[in-house]
Image (cartoon, rainbow, N blue to C red):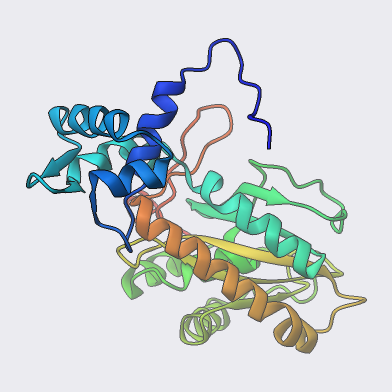
Length: 283
C-alpha cells in the first residue's frame, strides 16, 4: 500500500515520537526497546533515540530493560481537558441521540430563574418561538429546568418558591407553589422530568440531569416532541431510555474532564452550576 502523501510542513519525527507514546496502553504498560520498535515500525536505533529523549524530558522512565510512561504524560492532555466546555462535550452525544430518536435535543443550564440553551441539535421546528443557543425560558415550566431545580438543596427550593412568579403560559401550566414543590420532589425521586404542554400548547419534553464528577447537577438534556404524535406514555417508553443512556455518557466524559463550563453567547463563558449563589433565588 502506498504511503500517504504528506504536506511540506509535516514533521515525520514528531509523528514517530507520538507513536512511541501511544505504544503504551493498559495492556502494555511496560515495553522493551524491541517491542516499542516493532509496535511503531521503527528501527531499534530510532526507537532508542525517541525513548531516551522522552526519558530526558520526564515522560518515560526505564529500569534499563523495560520502559514505562510517567504521570507527566498527563500534562499533554491537561490543556485540552481544562479548556473544554460543557457544550463541546455534550454536542457529539446529542447528535447521536437525535440520530437515534429523530427528535430535537438540547442541553440547558440554569441562570437565575431561567434556563439557557447552551447547545442544541434540532430536527424540525416544533415551537412558535425559534430556539437557538442563548434562548431563555422560565425554568419552572421546562423539563430541563425542573430536573436542575429538583436537585437543588431543599432550603434553596423553598427560597425560590417563596418569591416565585408562576405565570400561566398555557392551560396546563403549574401555577401553584405547592403543586410545583410536589412535582420537583417527584422529579428528584424518579430521575427525570416530563413536562406536558406547560410551556407551549402541543409541546411535550422529557429531560434528565447532567452531573459532574462530584455528582453535582450542572445541566439538563431534553428531548422535545410534538404532542400530536407522541403521547406521554410513548415518550417514557420509547425516548426516555435513549435520553438516560446519552446523559450517562455525558456524565462519564465529565468525570474525566472535571468541572464543566458552558459558553455564554457574547461573553464566551457561562456559569453552569445550579446558581446556588444567586442573590434572589427564584424558580
